[in-house]
Length: 228
Image 1 (spheres, rainbow, N blue to C red):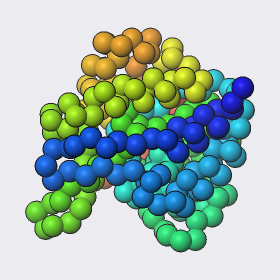
Image 2: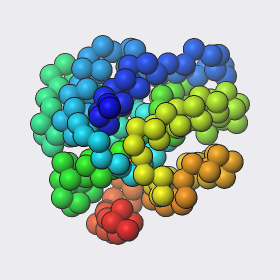
Image 3: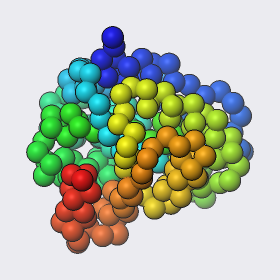
Image 4: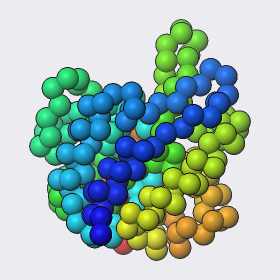
């Protein structure tokens, strides 16, 4: 019987999307674009998920360039991966605001070993997107930013949600990051009945960007909800 880690690693190795996307949007698949990402993420999952425990699912939006896009681990930039998780990354250094907040929560929860022993974090869309902004730079894009993008990704989202649940996810409650994300996850769950209940938390990026002065309040909110 495969461990939780082995299931996640196999999932990451195989995940791909090749269908056409709406104009100007590109898929971001760190596992295919950077071979080191697979090596880095496999070290992480083997360290924290090498068991058969059931875990609660924390569902983000889709990977960003500086977090999972660089490490293959949701909400984990290279700084947190090196300093907190003890898995050094020498080829690149990334600092991602969402990762800063999540790891403050993890610290207060009792540390990475305890936290990852109870929770599995990924995104409702496990691959990310980039689009060109008005300055011609490639920037992050969310699956729900355009109706046609959500439509193009819908079957992919459902198929990969089912795969992740099969890792050993506790389906009684899932935690959704971001209020706009909640709208779409609830729409998906209402149709498929994947989780008994959904608990919504403000997105770490929103907190760090707009509510950093009240960070302690939001950390306490996370801890209160995650511990119920």
